[in-house]
Image (cartoon, rainbow, N blue to C red):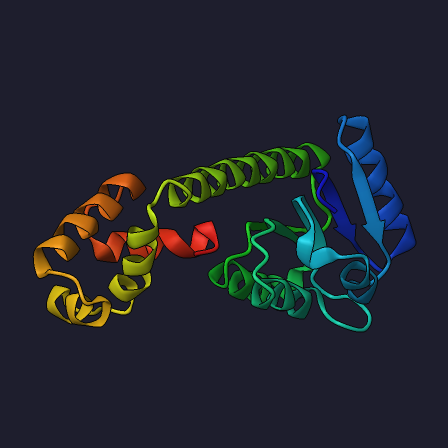
Length: 198
């Protein structure tokens, strides 16, 4: 699933077909699924692009599907389609990191604008992730040894003792790691690293 597309998960055949048509007409590659289980079996955790989930699906719900994706490390932007009574669920989904939600009946143009924005956000995140991974690749072997010790919150003197090197050497490598990664401090570096798979 490495090719960018719009992933549609809806158990209503008519709605799913209409969404596929809408996205294809706007020039997007589309994959559709009748259930959350189908999406997961089709490699959903590795999906690239953006997704539109009905919040109430037969079997695994859209919200539970979203949670499974996040637990698997997926950052796929998800837009939820929701009925009026499900707005509180959709708000919970937003708080959990969903991209957005639209209430049914929705405006086609509004949905397409959301999908375009979600795809753009996903592209930006992938580009940023690739950049961070490339920066990690510039670290020397010694810097790679020091990095996890920094992330563990160990003091320079503790790192020096563990690696049997001088404290000054640790200080120099610590400064180089921060400079190469473009972080001002270890806290900022710790925020960056999960995005780079670090």
